[in-house]
Length: 99
Image (tube, rainbow, N blue to C red; front, side, top):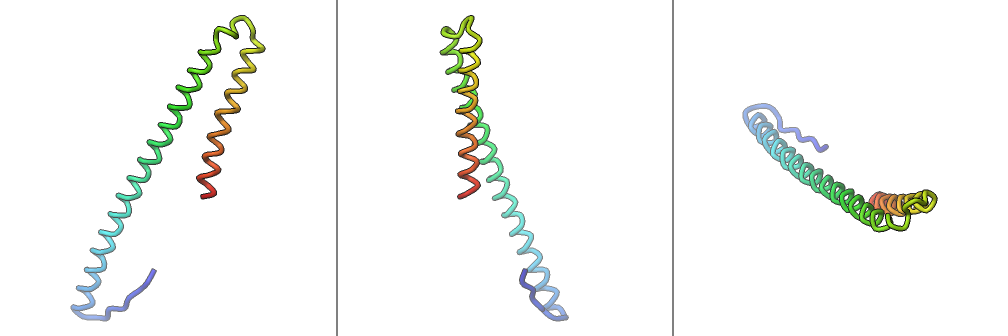
């Protein structure tokens, strides 16, 4: 962080108070921006999980007629959908980490 030597006397006191006020305003603006970013990221994560669960449940219930009484086929569908849906979440996390 840059430093400034303002010296002694009334001018040094006034400049120090001015720097103090400017840094306070800068920190408040930074916190407001970080808060908005946090809520946006939280909204995107909640939206992603909502879409994931609603789409997954729709696909699972659409296959329920085929899997009645067949536990092996039911487990195959459930493992396949679990792997597919978890894979794209990890791809998104990987892409956000690399870019």
